[in-house]
Length: 561
Ligand SMILES: Nc1nc2c(ncn2[C@@H]2O[C@H](COP(=O)(O)OP(=O)(O)OP(=O)(O)O)[C@@H](O)[C@H]2O)c(=O)[nH]1
Image (cartoon, rainbow, N blue to C red; front, side, top):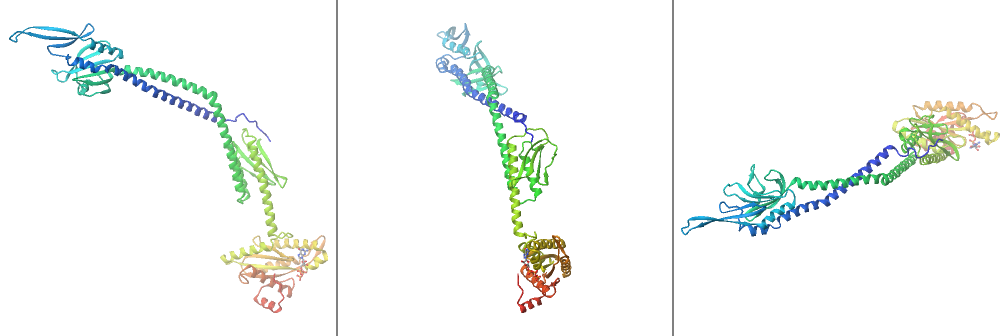
């Protein structure tokens, strides 16, 4: 028996790839989950930073309007106007001077610096580079236009802006309509911005931030997250290779072993179930081989051979010259009876000792099963056959007659029962001894069996009595021919232990359905007919007739068996 070491090729490459792919997917999944978690944590911070900026910009809003707007209208056609000069906001108020006739004689212009308002506008710079505060008032003269104070890090200026661009309201129009909110849209420069807008008295105010600048902060955050995720993936992969991979390999190995054990259990279970089903021999052993092949590690290259005495069963691909094999002896009744061999057609490692164990177990199961079958056969043989001649005994004969009658009733076929009693057997027994008598009975059985067709039955009824059952006969003539043949055979001398012995026979014949429709009647009537043959003319045969019953009733002397 050739054995191959464990280890090399224990894992197929396929398993390794599976483990690596599964591990990598787990790590990438882990990293993604971590990335999403980090992003979820940082998102509120980004949003709150933006909100904070808005808050700073708007926090002084009430003072601005309470203190400034009512007293100093931002724009006036003649008398007053706001101006930005010397880095500050200045309110110019021009008042006419009138005489007693209400005639204008001159004007007085005053300049008032607005330091508080100036400082609000300057604060805008601190929010961000692109932050811009816009304060607008509807321009009455121009209808659809607005006059706005624009303040950002670079300038503070007044500008006339349209309240609609391509029939779409601008941000400030919403604020002037009394609406407030935060939105993302294109502002007056047609640049995408994120804006917070609100009405302030009769004015509209908005704080805008360039979207690009805002996103750049988020991009910075994104880069940090990406770096974090990258580090996480690398760490995960290192973990996979150093810690998880060996663990997963171990798991894969255990799983594979468990699968193999399960296959083996299924194989054994299947074989034991088949053993209970009384399958034809060839079919049973083919099933055993198929189940065993399936349970092996490499079923596609496995073949099996079962040798039992002179018989040999082989699976597909079997070739006796193949070398890579495991085998186990089949022991029956303590003696070597055969072999169970498993052969790999290519050089592959056997999963020793597990596969050897499985083969040993099946070989041992087969040995026990064969033993049980042999015992069962012996018991059945003893119960249904005569121990001396090997012919069916009266119990089996009754059974056979029953079957033939049942068949005959359906098909209207006839049958005949021939009751044979040897003549002068007792004298041979007495003169030659019981052992010679036994041998003579055996020889008689052989001659009778040679006369009949294979479908017919010859049985030993007991003592020196034999019965022949002929099935499917066309008429009584057939029975007559067989009876004559029997007499011819029995009158031929027997040569036993160098002695020539002579006997004869008397035969009674009962026909189905003419002389009886059941086993007992047919046997009884054939016995009566045999009695008549023996009484009248030895070495002869008689057909049963109802008158024979009459005569026996008169004589009262037939011993019915
Ligand atoms: N050797 C041997 N003899 C047996 C066996 N069974 C029955 N016998 C004997 O067979 C004989 C049968 O008796 P009979 O049929 O009356 O003897 P017979 O000489 O044939 O008498 P007829 O039938 O009138 O010719 C008896 O002596 C039995 O003891 C057996 O198994 N072996």
